[in-house]
Structure formats: structure tokens, C-alpha cells
Image 1 (spheres, rainbow, N blue to C red):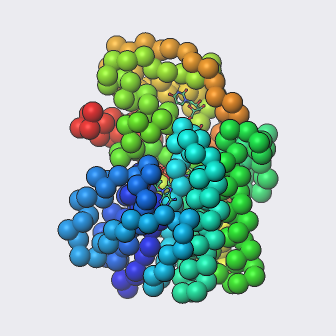
Image 2 (tube, rainbow, N blue to C red):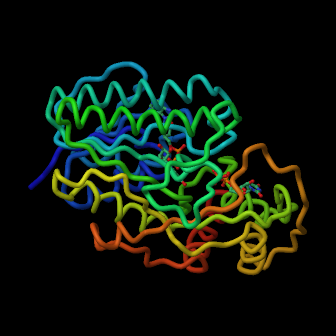
Amino acid sequence: MKKKILITGGAGFLGSHLCERLLNEGNEVVCLDNYFTGQKQNISHLLSNPYFELIRHDVTTPFFIEVDEIYNLACPASPIHYQYNPIKTIKTSVMGAINMLGLAKRIKAKILQSSTSEVYGDPEVHPQVESYWGHVNPIGTRACYDEGKRCAETLFINYYKQNEVRIKIMRIFNTYGPRMHPNDGRVVSNFIVQALKSEDITIYGTGNQTRSFCYVSDLIDGMIKLMNTGDDFIGPINIGNPNEFTIMELAKKVIEITGSKSKISYNPLPSDDPTQRQPNITLAKEKLNWQPKINLEEGLINTIDYFKTVI
Ligand code: NAD
Ligand code: UDP
């Protein structure tokens, strides 16, 4: 049955893929964005679809609409962007969650929160399981994002308990793919752009810190599967690729695939940069029958092909 679905942050990297997928599945999609880090270009190919609607709006102010489901993705995800105006980042996560949960309550919509592996901070438990409470510096440079997202989870769980709002909390681990902004500042886009321009590959710190990179199509599969679970399953649930790589390994892979002449340069490590990150996805396998299909090599090839067209 055709559903009417609201996607906040729909013009961003993940949001644009989600809009596209849900439209392809025969739904009506309303994309809401303030274009802070998102771009019209990401969804311009969808504008001719009569079941797609684009609205400029900031989630820190209330919004009213009748929909069946809400995916709440609005929030800058890259450290350079979320640290640009930290107070605004907190407002987006917290007031955005309050406004969207209030809407979900009023119209009885199901609502999914795009939370993050950052709720685990610089984790002392490895790989990270959903039951781990995390290790976050509340006054550090990443706190505007981490604590904002943690507070949003608290809001979600309490709207569920107090008001019976149908919620889903998804903890997303590093995701990459086509439509990342070339100036996004995240490691995969930075390295690919640098390699394609034969500029130095900027490793922050030693490059021994690790991340686990999930390709965007896998992530979107997991997100939609989570939304479609029964009302008794609310998460939080990790969605990410458990294959863990050092940042140095990533740099070498990007250089190898692009055949670039770029050299590696070492830059200072940003404060509170997590040393390791890997999702435990046992719960996703069990509850969603989900696991990633695209390995890093394949995902990087697709992403590099995309960046060749935009640089
Ligand atoms: P993105 O920056 O490309 O997309 C975020 C979108 O939200 C942008 O289109 C931006 O313009 C919009 N936005 C920001 N503030 C807004 C506001 N106040 N009102 C309305 N729109 C606003 O980032 P992304 O990678 O697509 O991330 C999407 C969501 O997934 C975010 O909530 C992010 O925290 C979460 N997430 C992403 C990753 C990842 O690796 N990509 C990892 C963990 C969590
Ligand atoms: N990083 C890097 N060079 C870059 C960008 C990022 O070495 O040009 C490192 C960064 O310090 C971190 C990792 O890559 O250790 C992932 O950074 P990103 O900003 O992509 O995401 P997050 O830290 O939020 O996982």
C-alpha cells in the first residue's frame, strides 16, 4: 500500500538515497530540508515525480503535515559541519526531535531516529553493542553532536513510554557512497577527492585509529527494514559494516584503486577523535535479517566513479 512518508534532512547524503528508494517502492515522499549541508542537486532528479514534494524548512521550528511515517535525518553529520555552529547542532538534534516527536504523537505516525555510533563516544567496549552506555566527553568538541543525539534518543524513548509514540532508534556507523559532498570533510570523501586531484592525502594523527565503513545502499536497506518491524521492536539497533580498517589502510586502498600519485601527509588529530569503532550487528542480523553486502573495495570503486563525475 502506498504510504505518505516525511524525510527530514532528505536533501542530504543519506536522505537523498532514502527519498529515491522509498519513491521507487511506490510511496509518496515529502522531503524537508534547510539546505545547511544538503543540496537540491541531490534530489533534483526526483522533482519531476508527482509523488515527490520538496519543502524548505528548519526542524528547530514546528512543522505540521499528515503522514504515515517520519524518518528524522536532519542534522549535519560531518565533524567540521556540526562543529561550525555547535549550539545550532544541539538545537537541530534536540528541538528537531521534540518537533518531530510531537508531530508523530499528534498524527499517530511511526517515527525513526537516525542516531549514531557517536553515542558510544570513544568506546571502551569493542566492538560496540547496543547495551553499552558509551564514553562521551560532555564538554568536548564533539559533544554538540554526541550529546544532542543522546538527548534525542532519550526524547524518543520517553515519547514511547509516556505517549505510546511508535518509535525506532537506529545507531548508524560511518557510511559512505555517491552524493557525499566533496567538501563534506569526512574521511572517505576527503581521501577520494585528494587522490583524484593528486593532492596530499591528509591523515589526522598516526592513521592507526579505526573505523568500519558501510556502503550507502546497505545502510538504506537496514533503515527501511527497521522502519518495517513491528511496533514492539524499537531498538536502539546498530546498523553498520563490521569490517574494521585503520585510516591508514583506507588511505592506501584509495590510492591503489584510483592509481593516484598522491603522497600521505600527517596532520594533528582532532580532539576527542575516537580511537576505534566497530559495530556488533548481532541484533540487526536477528531482528532485521540484515547484514551488509557491499565490501569496502566495491563500495569505494562506486564512490570513486561518482566523484570523477562531480570534480
Ligand atoms: P548530511 O549532512 O549529508 O545530511 C543532513 C541533512 O540535514 C542535510 O541535507 C542538511 O541540510 C539537513 N539539515 C541539517 N540541519 C537541519 C535543520 N535544522 N533543519 C532541516 N534540515 C537540516 O549527513 P548524512 O550523512 O546524510 O546524515 C544524515 C543523518 O544520519 C544525520 O542525522 C546523521 O547524524 C546521521 N548519521 C550519519 C552517519 C554517516 O556516516 N553518514 C553516521 C551516523 C549518523
Ligand atoms: N580523518 C583523517 N583525514 C581526513 C578526515 C578524517 O584522517 O581528511 C580521520 C578522522 O580523524 C577520524 C576518521 O578519519 O579518525 C573518521 O573521520 P570522519 O570525519 O569521517 O568521521 P568520524 O570521526 O565522525 O567517524
